Image (cartoon, rainbow, N blue to C red; front, side, top):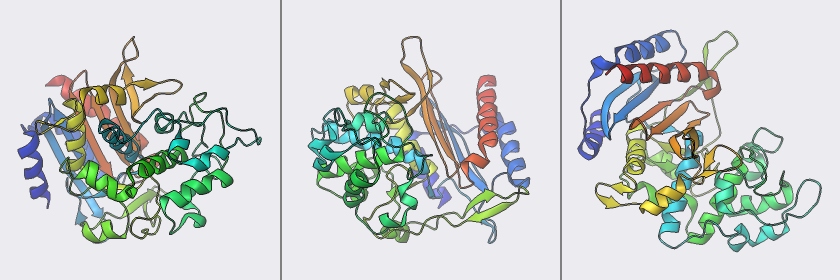
Length: 376
């Protein structure tokens, strides 16, 4: 599978792999597996749209010693958020979605949305505000902020869960006034997108995002997707003594039922490269237009307050005029990707070791990658 995935990627993107230029990165990855910092993972580095380094390190499952590959599908967690944003801009580009309209246009139940004080919203949020975490919805770290763990959401359709938020989970602030990282906001955005398209969210991702970009292993996690894809890695976290322990995670939801809209997409390093190269190419995929130049510009426009673009990317670096020079996103499952427009570098790191447990590993890895790139 690893070779097939790489052949597919290289035919589309091109490659000039020079592993010797990244010896310190390779050694760091090997040491991190040996020292049980991570169980395993995949790393792709692209320069000018070409793969210049790829590594599959460690194990997808420690007990069976099943190897990780660059084509291993993983739960990418919050990298799902800018993917959903890209899907939204695709639909808007087609004239099928108004990202600046109040969400009540698509979700009438939100006419009754209120703050915790009981005060009515001065206006409903827009999809752009929800994607950029400025819609006023509940901070993920607060009580009730992660409804995908709640039993009441199990087995329901996305629209049932999203409409249920109105009476169960009040807004924290007036839309457009504060930045608060919110998976609930992403869910509401997904509900509006689904309502506009008239197609279930999971199916919409496949039809309008993954298939056109040739991302054959990219799906929302549900029973149909898990049955169709190769086995996912075992997920791990650090125990009190630093050992790697198995994280069981949430049960696989039935087909086309609710899961976190901003946290439950499955993908691979090679698939994600297709997406990021398309953005790097200003909307072109294999020479065909996936997004217009205008849509790309709008999707990457910074939103204030906060540090997100309209399409949900984190802004990693910007110029004096506020233009995003580098964008990316991390995921709680131990994933990270970035696109640096200034240096023309794309990086994709996928593990399934808890993100907060490997933050130091991630930061050191990026530093070593940048050092290797600077020396080339």
